[in-house]
Image (cartoon, rainbow, N blue to C red; front, top):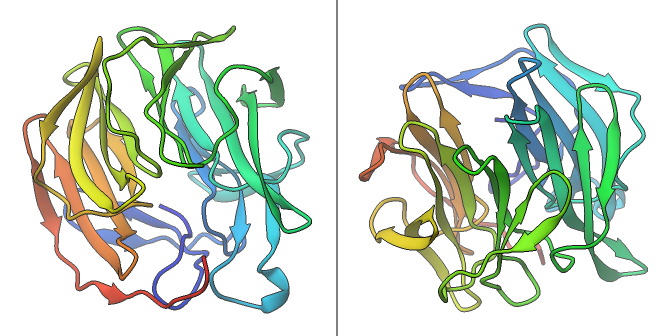
Length: 287
């Protein structure tokens, strides 16, 4: 886990979770940021991080800064890459496609003269360079949930901002197509990961346009509601699949009032709180 914001600052720290506790790693690299896109690249054994934004706290002159830098994290720490790729942005959706061994990045947003500019381009990272793969498909959006589906071999994208939406799209590696699924409540800033042990994508939490939610859905032909218990209602959480322990691990997020530091794990049946942490009162910052 890297960066993000607590109740008082934007971080540039790197932490690892071993199933029972967090360890602060000594590596320094990307500067403080929120809403960066990060995925684990299995083929190359490293994490890829792109972009983000310096907002919430920090020097006032940085508040409008969107980032377009690319970094990798390996055994020796962070390394900046001189890579030309997506334009600077925050809240892009990202997933590692294990079948084609590339990282897929879609959308996000930036500001142009104070106006929010949502993006709809699709890029892929092959370990050496970024390639623009598509400019059509899902409508431009930020805050979508995206994960690779090991059964279909495709990347799945759900939801968006601009009024939480309920559309589901899949990326084949060549083109996007919309899935014809039954009506599903729209979401913004939910999170998703592929549960490899059980062969399905799991999606949870988010914002429905009125309030934060805590429900959990799985994808198998269509979305199925599987739990309404687990992490308290929130959005902007982080989630990843722990292949060694066959668990989804969820950390943090906020509900508009509180910032969370708890850790939850999904075992395919239910969520279990693994680390309780007192919530912090969120500082109002206009974001």
